[in-house]
Amino acid sequence: MYKNNKSYFKILDERNFEELQMLGTKVVLHKIRAISFPEINFIHDLIFNYQAMADDIDAKDFEELKQKV
Image (cartoon, rainbow, N blue to C red; front, side, top):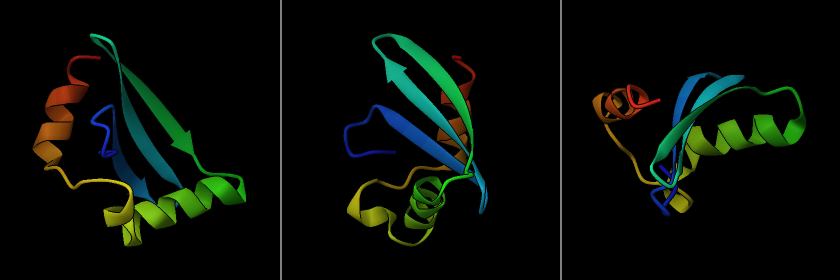
């Protein structure tokens, strides 16, 4: 989860992730396949250096929020 509490991420593998984005009272799901270098780098940062930009949440919390999509 970004430190702004508006985006939540689930890493599926080294090239794919899901983002739940809070837009007002709505929750929007984005499924991202990393193709470009910046996207691949972003996944790498989420895996190995997330503390600099995000907070850790439980998978259960992510899935509960995903049910609101």
